[in-house]
Length: 137
Image (cartoon, rainbow, N blue to C red; front, side, top):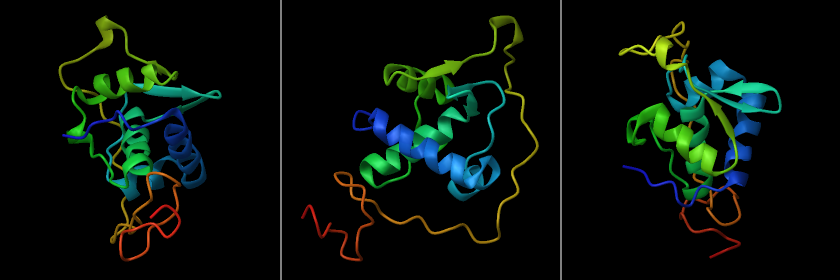
């Protein structure tokens, strides 16, 4: 189970920037997240998948991607963490919630997932093969 205490607002903004540059389907496909239909992270008038953004923000903070199944409470848990960092997350009305979440069309995944480089949790630089940051030690 991943812990998210080291994930900062800046890490979340970095993940949102990557989401914008890749586009939703590539971002979700590269990191292995299924689309979430009910919950949305709102930022600057755009909607994002809260679990995927938080999982990638965890990678920026710690160097390790947090998978959806590592998030306690699923989307509800991710929403709480994002709200604590000052972000707005929408939830479906109680009457609209269903036991099984509605799914969007499956994400088209490339045959070989893109290799995700390890990131230094202090300076966010790509780590060399040794795993020790050249700048931070």
